[in-house]
Amino acid sequence: MSAIVRLIKTNIRQYGMIMVLACLMLLFQALTQGIMFKPMNITNLILQNSYVLILAIGMLLCIVTGNIDLSVGSVSAFVGAVAAVMMVNFEMGVVPTILIALAIGAAVGAFLGLFIAFLRLPAFIVTLAGMLIFRGLTMVILKGQTKAPFAKSFQALAAGYLPGRDWNVDGLNVIAVAAGLAVSLILTFAILYSRRIRMRHHFEPVPIWIDVLKIAVVVAAVNLLTYELACYDGIPVVLVILTALILIYTFFTRRTIAGRHVYALGGNERAARLSGVKTNRVVFWVYVNMGVLAALAGLIVAGRLNAATPKAGVNFELDAISACYIGGASASGGIGTVIGTIVGGCVMAVLNNGMSIVGVSVDWQQTIKGLVLLLAVWFDVFTKSRPQPR
Image 1 (cartoon, rainbow, N blue to C red):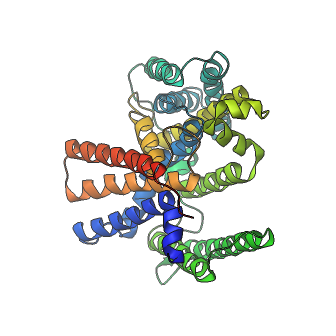
Image 2: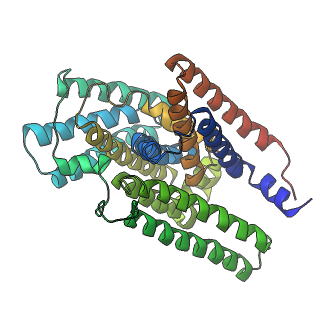
Image 3: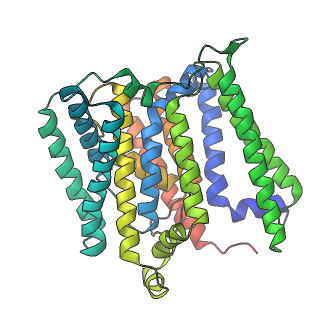
């Protein structure tokens, strides 16, 4: 068996969805007659789907522990409504409003986590109740009406761009191009450093040409993205926020003891408890974290709409859950990666965007997305049932 085939089979969950994403983008590029890869459309994809990816990162930790959170859409709407009242009615500053809103999200997560972690109530029931509670409170706060507008600085959180939009050379935003080159160097160093660490600890590394191929693909993808952004208005602020979250949570899940405890709990709760993991605390803090990320997503949605609406956040939880499962998270817990979740979210985003451009009706869009989710879960079960290659 060749090295490349062995590598793909060993990492089938991770690489499978990346290939699916690439094929979807090429398919819709052809079906939309080139609209998919237009700079404006790429930017809109990021702005319109950032909240799903933020929620999906938090949802991943819930799913890895073997639980779920159905309340995130309602919590996002609730926090957005509270932020609107603080800024519009009480004329509070943007920074205090954001800090208070994130604290409210943490309190909501602690409230739900208390019932799940310490009172041992099923997460499905607790978060379903939370969905109803906070949707109702959103209606109460807004009194069924839209509340707007917000300060320009708050809108920039979700719809703004990094400074230097006027720094152009031949129509390309200099900041975006420079960011692409910088990220390429960092990722190249990370791949080579990982190879060096494996060799230092006497693990068999993959053939060098595979790492070179990986670097080439990653660098090409990063610079293609930043080139598209450079052709428009530059790098959106929300992309910077999302990138920071990806880096932080990738480090947390891969390199920290607390991250390993989350996976140990999802893999086998009893064994984790016997090993000294304080499982109740782990679940509690996972839901506190989910509350903070739901609050952040609510602020971004409100900033993008420049309004808090009673219907904000509807079906957000379904999009986040779908992103996790499509990205390789296991329904039984213990398995899933941040990068895989982001890829799953991008698959959903490309599906939504591509089908809308092509003119597929909303009814059929929902049907197709449901089938994709079903196939992703089946793929997870199928790959787990197969013997692993040696």
